[in-house]
Structure formats: structure tokens, C-alpha cells
Length: 316
Image: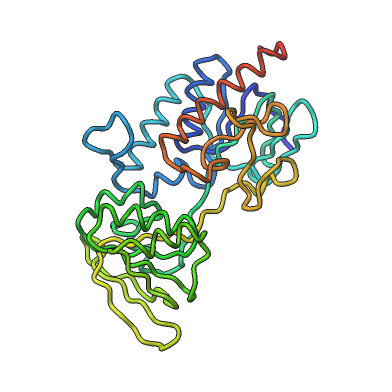
């Protein structure tokens, strides 16, 4: 076992929340250490065009944006490392974190958790292909703008899917909502909203079979009616998957209070968790907004909360 490294502020995970926390913590002279996690840069590294983040009037590619965040954090001497937390012990005033199955042991006075959440996908090869080429997305609010006036499809049956379908209906010509069963899981209010929106067509008892397209992106989706076995081709240019997200918080479940889905609970208006000196930011604790800009804002909150906590303990 290696000798434990001692730090004032450990940031677990990257992405807009983690990098913003690092920038603020470094400027406050907390000398933060960051472990980037299994997906350095977070979900935005799998996103193509980002047009809704302030300061980029012509848009920016997701990976490029995250590289800029990283360079800014490094400019203020954040110790950024590859690797991810595989075990934690939050039982004492000093928080212990093991990285890469115990290869590194960190003793931190404060921990900022920015591990994010991962979208759930259908698991189709073609779905993954067009995530990178363009046309497949897990965020209608992020990417719906690109399909103004076009026909799109969305798969899902919960509140998020219903909300995103109605959001898309305001922008798009036609929205096909693909529902696996003959009923939705969404609340009655959300179901009424979907069913009363004229340009949303709900396809009940329907599974997605294949996403079709070319080198420019998606141009159709093949769906199958599970009752009749009949295939149908939908001529769409955007395919949205809204079957849920899973927060990347399993490693903390024995220590932190979470909701039934695994999102870390924080004291409202703060990033504070039930453990003193441990803070949660970004999509690991936010199941409502899930935007890069809100994640960045909460990263700022985490760093400020960590700084004030250390000051209250007289730790420098």
C-alpha cells in the first residue's frame, strides 16, 4: 500500500461541475486535487455541438469545451489526475478515498463529488453509431434546437419523456413518442399534456428496432409493434432517448443519503451532504435540470462551501 497523500480539497469527477469547482477551489488557495473518473470531461465529451452555454456565440464542440475548462483549472495549478475512486471511508473528520482499487490512498479534509450521471441507452449498435455522427441524443433541451421544423422521435414513457416530447413539439414539425407498453408511467397531468398536443403521435406497444442514417446523421427509425409484429419506418432526423439517467454514485452509497434513484441528497440551497466536509455538485445530485451551466454553477457552490468549511475549522 502506498503512503496516503494528504490534501485539503479532493474533487472526484470532472465535467463542468468538477472543473468549475477546481477553478474556484484553486483560486481560493485550497490546492485541489482532481481525479477525472472513467469519462474525463463527463457527458459533454460525447456531445457534438453545444450552443446553449453562455460565452460561445457560435457554439462549441463538447470535447473542445471540456478541454478549455480543463486548461483553465490547470492554469490555477489544480492537480488533475487520471483514475477514479473505487472505495471511500467518510467515518472520520479526515475523509479517506482509494483510487483505482487501492493503488492510491487520499486523505482529504474536504471532498467535492462531481461524478455526474450517465444516460440509459437502448443498447442498439446503430444508436451508439449516430450518437457520434449526430442525430441521437439523450437531452431534448440540449439538442432539440437543431431539429426545428423537422420530424423527430423520442422513446420513453415517464415524466421526463413526456416533458421532453412536449418541449420538442414546440420546435419540431412532428414528434413520434415511442412507448413500449400500452400505457405511460408519466403522471396523469403529463400524459394529458402529451395526448392534447396535436403534433405528438404516441406509438403504443412499440419497440425501436434500428436507427438509420448516413454520414450526415439520422434520417429514419425502424420500429416494431410488439402486438402485431409489424415494422414501421419513421422518417425522422432526430432520435431522442428518454428512458432515464443513472447517477454515478454507487461508491458512496454506504455513507451518503440518496434518493431511491441514487441521486445524492444535499441541504437545499447548498452543496452540503449529510457528512460534514463532503459536498455533492452537478448531475450526481441534480435530477431536475441536468444542464452544463447549472452543473458549473453548483460546482462553484461546492468550492465555496468547501472553502467556508475549512475556514470554520481553522484549516489552512
